[in-house]
Length: 131
Image (cartoon, rainbow, N blue to C red):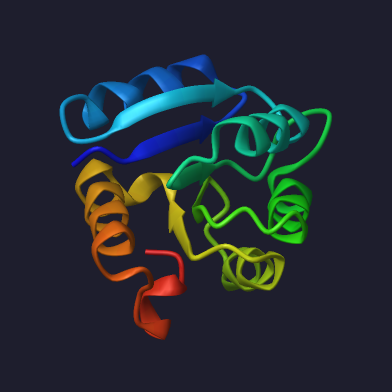
């Protein structure tokens, strides 16, 4: 699969960990350490998938998603958050995310979600919730 992925998380260990698990499956085209940088890199690189944290400095992930959607960048956006509440999933959906996963969901779930978005373009409504 030759998908381009943008990783947006302010924690270096998270970005490196996700990158390591994606190695060979998809290409990480860039990393961003805050929402503003994520928007800039999304505009520049037009990734297929953006894996976005919510709690980041400068601009949070939800605002970054809103801006990316406003700019009509067609990337699929997967929110990966440590906040495991229905309100987080609802806020992510309202901002324009295609899926919302808890960081505790694990690598296999993240990879399945990315694969489904790349293959089908969307997920059934029930899979948008934190899992």
